Amino acid sequence: MKLLGTLWGSASHFLSGSIRRPRTFISRHAIAPLILLLTLVLVMAGCSGTPSNPELIMASTTSTGDSGLMDALIPIFEEETGYTIKPIYVGSGAAMTMGERGEADVLLVHAPASEVAFMQAGHGTNRKLVMHNDFVFVGPAADPAGIKGTASAVEALKKIAAAGAIFISRGDDSGTHKMELSLWTKASIESEGQTWYQESGQGMGATLTIASEKDAYTLTDRATYLATQENLSLDILVEGDPVLLNIYHVIQINPNKSDKINADGAEAFADFMVSDEAQEIIRTFGVEEFGQPLFFPDAGKTEADLGSV
Amino acid sequence: MDLIAEGIVQAFQLLIHGDPEMVRITLLSLAVSLSATAISLIIGITLGTVIGLTRFAGRRFLVSLINTGMGSPPVVVGLIVSIILWRNGPLGILHLMYTPYAIVIAQCVISLPIITGFTMASIQQIDPKLRLQLVALGASRWQLLWLLVKDTRLPLLAAVMAGFGSIISEVGAAMMVGGNITGQTRVLTTAIVMEVGKGDFGLAVALGIILMALVYLVNLALTIVQQRSKPR
Image (tube, rainbow over the protein chains, first blue to last red):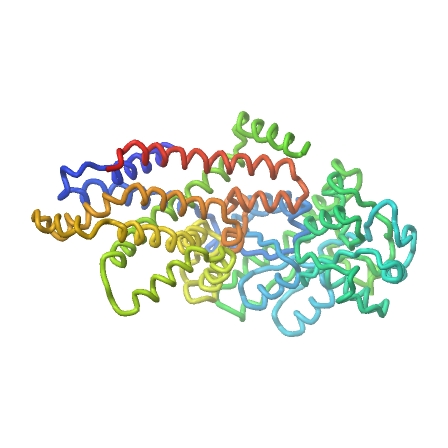
C-alpha cells in the first residue's frame, strides 16, 4: 500500500506540477513512477518452485472447482511435489480442446465416451479412473411433469418432454451436457429447438441457479448440487439409474504435441490423484458439511467394475 | 434483498478481520489495474498528443479506429490476447498466460484507446492561438508539448478515471487470460463471478461492495487532485 501511495503521489505531482521548471520534468517527475512501476512488476514476478519446470496447467470441469474438491487437494499436491498448479475450470469439452492444442498438461474430466475418442486420436498418453459420483435430475418440489421416483432416466426425460415442462440444459459441451444429450438420444426425443428446452451456456452452479429461478428441471452432478443447494429451491427427483454414473478420469497429455508440455508434472499429478492419500481426501470430502460424500474414490478400478458400461 | 444486507454484513466482517485472501485479491486487483492504467497513460498521452497536434494521411481513419476502440468488448480483447499468449501462440515463449501480467496486457489494450481518445480530444480543444503564442514567446518544441499537455490536465485526469474505471470493473478479459487461479490471478471481478457460480451470493455481494468502495476511493483521490488545481 505504501508503494501504491508513493506511486500516486508521484503521479499527481507529475500531473499538477508547476510550470516554472519545464526543462526538468522528464528527469524528475516522469522517471519516479516508471521506476515504481518496474519495481511493482518485479515484485509480482518473484516466485519459483523446486522442479525444473514447476508450472503445471490442469484443465478440469466446473464441478471439481465449484464443489471445492480441488481446493482441498491442490495445496497438498503442491506442498509434496513443489509443482505449482494452474487449475483452469471449464467444461470437459473445452478442457479436452485445451489438451488437444497442447495448452494444458493434464486433464481431470468426466465425459468417458469423448475421452475414449480423445485417447484413440493420440492426444493423451495415460488415462486413469479417479473417482465417481452420479448425476441426478433436480426440479421444483411441485414436480409438474411428475418424474419423482421414476427409476429410469430416459423415462423421466420422456415425461418432461410430454408435459412440456421447462428443462435447462448446460448447452456448453461440458461432461454434464454430453451426458444429457446422450440421454435425449436414448429417449429418441428431439429436444433442441423446443420452447421448453432452454440452454444456459454456463457452468453447473449458474445453471442450477437459473433452473431454480425458473422452476425448471435440470441434470446436475450430485456434488455441485449438494454444495450449492442451500440457495436453491430444487429437489432431487430422479436418481440411482446406472446410466447416471458420473465418472472422472485423469489424462496426461501426449508430450509429443508440443515441447512445452510438462510431462513430468502431469505424471506426478496423475499419480497423486490415484494415491492413497488423495483417494482418502476424496472419500471424506464434504461428509462433515453435507452429511454425505460428494465423490467416491475409484483408483485401480475400471468402468466395468462400476457397472456403467 | 436479505442477500444484500447479508453481503454488507459480510463485507464488514471481511474488512474488520482483514481476511488474508480478501486482502490479496483486492491488492492484486488494484496493482494490476493501476499498472495497466499507468502503462496506458504513458503510451496513450504520447499517442493522443501526436495525433491531436499533427495532420497526416489516414488520420481520420485512425481516429475512427481509436474511437471504436473506446468501446472494445473486454471479452473479445481477452480472447485475442489469449490466442497470442497461449504457449503455442506467437508470444507463448514469454510464459505470460495465466499470470497477472497477462491481465495487465489485456487491460492495457482495453484502456489505451480510452486514454488516447480523451488526450486527443482535449489537446484538440485547446485554442490554436495558444500554440502560436507559446512559439512566439520562444518555447522549444518540448516546452511547447509539455505546456500543452499540462494545460489539458483536467480532462486528462478524467481520462485516467475513465480508463481505470473501465478495467478495474471488467471481468471477461481477466477471467480468460488470468484463469481466476487462487492466490495467483484471482481478482475481485473474477472472484465475484466464481462465488455466483458456487451460489454463494452473500460473499459475491460482499466482494462487490469492496470493489465499489475501492473504485470510489481511487476516484476520490483523483478528484481531489483534479479539483485542487484551479482551472484557468
